[in-house]
Image (cartoon, rainbow, N blue to C red):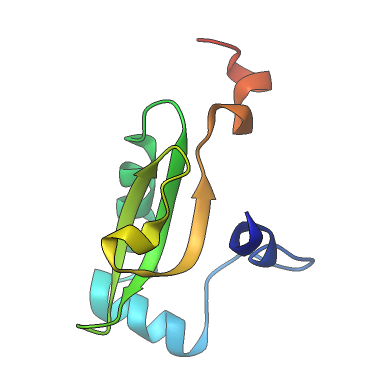
Length: 98
């Protein structure tokens, strides 16, 4: 969870700027297209896991990946940049076991 908590902070959120914004536009077409793809991939995680934005060190391209349970995104060779917690505890109080 270390990277998850370090990605959060006061005044955070919104559209990225700088080098990461340029990389997202280059690799996904736009920030809105990235959000669509990231959301679709993350929603596909069943039960417990993570949605990730990671950097592929070989191609220097951003990629979206998902992991079940506590499997690390590094197993796919990516350097994690942004993690989305899609574990059942993240939404249990709202949806219960539905």
